Image (cartoon, rainbow, N blue to C red; front, side, top):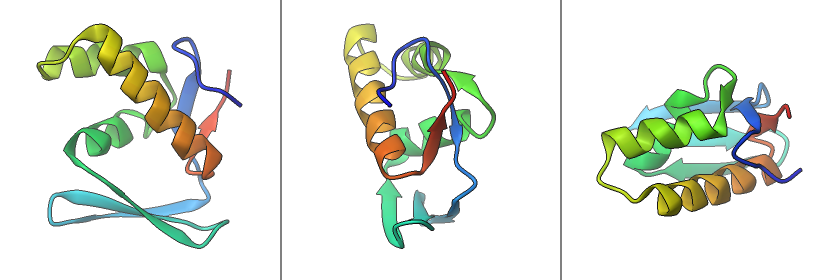
Length: 93
């Protein structure tokens, strides 16, 4: 499923995550693969611990970082699409 700005996303139950040296490392249980997130990716991960609208995640990041809103939305959608394909997040709408 493709993620859109009006999608609701939440971390999947089929993963385990841990903070290591300022980064978050995620083990996707279905694929048995590890994934790493940088600081901004970690912030997205924090924001989707509970179901969240992608547009709200983007607004939060734009407020917290010096980033153009369109660029931020594009990057967040790409990250969440990748996470969904790996089974790390659930897309609920």
